[in-house]
Length: 267
Image (cartoon, rainbow, N blue to C red):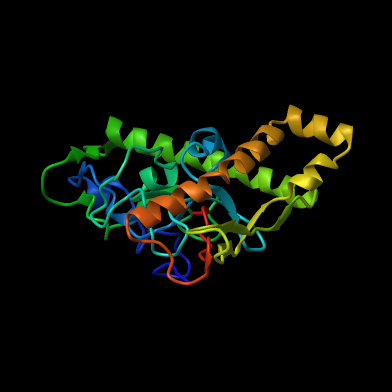
């Protein structure tokens, strides 16, 4: 199983430092066209705001954890990513989850009892640097438009994360999540299929059994379309599998875990 570099830090982040004009008044943000931090990551957290776009490119599953997190699969096996190559270059055009685009920034509480979230960054990323070419983060003691834009993006991500948590809470309350399993046939008929487990998915049979008033409520609050976006996205499993095989990254054994990493979106 993959694990974050530090237990208390989310996926991608090796360290966190609060961004402020006193310590980073002359620092700049680098602009690059690769995402090296996404290389070899097969499961990326996404928010419900992204389901409509993400389901066209990725299977959307839920982590197998007490508080499930929606994940977009860029590969079906740990360490395999069919979207980004080893250099962080996209192999093909696809929707890039906001979780990837947010890095190296993050809203976090500077202390457990803090009321407000502060804009932080990962100083080990090489994307926010003290010297070199880039976009200024501050003008004097005031944030630049670039920094204001980063803050706004992170705030919107947190709001989307809260909506996502409410969505998952509703699924748990209605007991709609079940252990997932997908069988993918490779080769001639009669050969053992590859079985992927280790994730959660919505139980479509239970959705069909919901009472009329429950369905109306799910439809009115926008949850029902999200459920079906997730279910429709599961067809992407076979497409991702085919891309793995074409790249020589297919599974070796007869079984595999579609998701063996729990990635938290919380700051």
